[in-house]
Length: 539
Image (cartoon, rainbow, N blue to C red):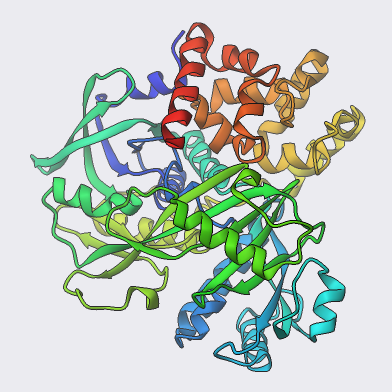
């Protein structure tokens, strides 16, 4: 049986592509979605899985960057607030407003009332799009969030921003799925060996990290969207740029839910930087750190865990302190921060997440530096403009390439879901009605999944015990979501491995059956590969 991945790989050497995009994180995903929808012939590759690096290890927040007010980057904050609002309008099922409840410790560098004024300015710069901020006394904080330790608190406030109701990797993948619907040829676990100019085109040598086979792909232009590996790819391709990256490591710990309050609890950690306690369905996500590292690859260290656990135990009134035994999963990502290539003395802690795109118009080569999820639509639009300047014809330049399907499709789905009683099939462990999750994760494809359940009720079976995913979802992932390794499904197409402890997961009834659906006769080796990889990571 030819998989979607292999079918795409087989097309690499067929003709000349308008664009090859290297890297399938958020920057590469939106570039592919925008260009493919506007009529370009696009190929997209990643040396790992889609959204396999920074884009699957964020705080799941799509916020306007309130912290940049302190460094007087008002224009950046205004643009990010505008981008946040745009995301919320176009992805109402995914990017949702959430309240942030912030407490300020005594002796902090600014008094609570002064920071509260900042939230008012932030709200105004956001065009009053969210609910109005509110000042909170020490007593009011305790009344709203009894879990907060107010012994050393002088006051606080509440304001709004937005977050991803699902996980970040899924949000990124949906852009990639959209790009493939418009004809993009995408494949994961394809490594770029090098790219060279030949006869006015880029000839890229590729290596399939699954089969070991080499491939060659010709393209008129090349976009380096490799996230933290942008500098490495540019070095391989001998491409000089105006910018480069420095790296900040951020980690989060996932634990059982420590408060029923559906708000983000925000503090300033011991080192003075923002620290979040974020609701994540039945779990809580705690972090983040902000540690300078020299290389893109980074791991959670004992020091990282001690920092996060120490702060959360200090800032909250818990029945008992959290320990390492309470950690269900960990997230570790490296934020690539864009700086001028000649800057060797700048204070990296003052750097923002704004993006920069360097372009060699003569050779049709773009490099995308920095950026954050909030600004992703702007990145996609900017890339299309620059690619046109490189001489690539986009037949449908005004086509809107992003957003959820229109209300007619949405209403049709919910009508069918109601008629068949879909929400009655919602697993007991789920934190939302099944219809909401189907629409948010699968969009118009959810209608086809309803038909599969109608034709075969067994498709509504809860396949993996302790996880909320149905058989129909696993079948869908096997056919349409290019799941190449088990971790692709458990960690990035879904968030199962973030909310189910590893030992519970690998012993869960139904996991073997899910592997059979995903990998057919390779299921045993793929399951063992996942177990071995997890053991190596733990070591």
